[in-house]
Image (tube, rainbow, N blue to C red; front, side, top):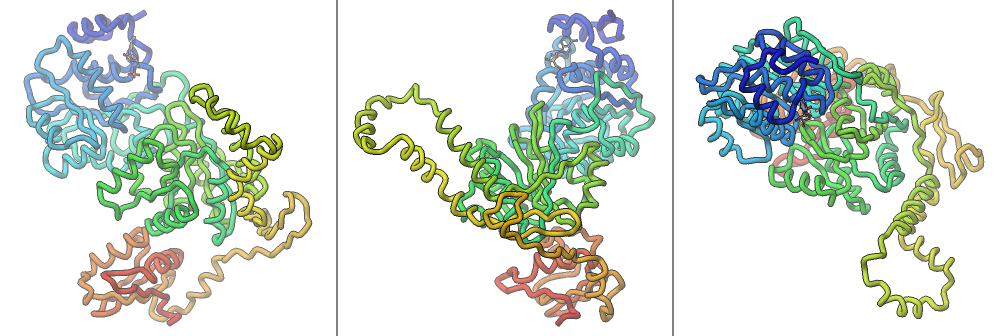
Length: 566
Ligand code: AMP
């Protein structure tokens, strides 16, 4: 077996690891350290946590940085604050006998002022989470100009958490980078892409078996019609009584509306979106993290970087426009070896997207029926009964109350007590789901509706209605002959203009923010004092109208509609 000395490490580092009780290098250390000591070779290490990755990059970094130069030379980027602190702690141990080397951790949720002060003292190694690092770059509080080595640790997790653009930004802002070392447990195509773009013939090492995607996640989809999306969401929540989950919407308006509606209906939910102040955001996140809040509903941007353990379900209220976003969303569950379920509510027209996503996540989707009202009731009933049976009665002084209870229930049978208990806990569901309709859109473009109390599979009381997807042709037809509009675009009228204090850029930003659409969907813009006309790609125009029409701007009601239909 090879030793740490034989890997070519500095004697002071060998001494430190020996004192830590390391006898031989782990597999990843044995393969990585000799390559990384050159400092000039790009490297990809595919290894799970717990394989000794931190020492695999930490020891070579300590070996090759110049302790005499007190500016950042190495940057380790990792997904979470916890990992950040863990890496710093380990590197501190490794550098025990190396004088003059400083390592500092910068991560969100802690005082940026103190971190800036630490950086100013002069450090060689910075360990950072992407968001905070970008904040520091933008404040010009960190100098990456002389960074030679960049380590991306748990790259797949960083991408899952939506940090892809941030990572690219960081890599673009390290002009003197001589080598990039990427560590990841899995190798999804997104990471391949990043490595192709920013790395030069990386030396690749795989330790153990590499999963191509997170096999701990069960990807499920439920097909329903657009008007049943909200009902389906409710049913999925009700069918999973112990759910601790995040629901994703495409727009902040949807996130807010759905949160308000569900709260009114008694659900334990709050929304996270871009319009919240930092304090409101922290409050919502704090409650969710403490599990005092059971459900969080968020837009992709707002949920970026959320790292909460133990999430049981992710629900896609709608599939994201950009399929890569799916991996970020589903990656919020099934973490740290736990299993998780990612449920997508899908319209029949969107099923083509599932194929593309399957390719991306290298996993298959399972189509699952939307539970019937009866399914939900049964599930809730068992949950209540399990809760009852599992309640710990060994600790309270319940014996004191027993005589009183016995007296009170003297004439009530055990069966009656159980029924009453079920009714108290359960009434809401029974009443609500008594006549619940089937929300599934069945294959062959046919929809079953109104299954009045009928068990699935029976035909009694069922009315079958032809399902007519609103196809491409029809959509095009409705905008066909659009006066003056570029082909493929709808021309929308909106009662906002320069008199409202808008310039073209701020106006575009406003309508894109409101509708959560990308600027690529826009065509020609014609702004006047009081009104404007905006060309929007036909596929996106409904979303724009839905998100703007009827909303308020500075106390005035926005009116937006298809200019042709006016
Ligand atoms: P990591 O994968 O870096 O999180 O490391 C997992 C654990 O293995 C940590 O507690 C390390 O201290 C420990 N470890 C790393 N390398 C070795 C080694 N060569 N021998 C024994 N333990 C190690």
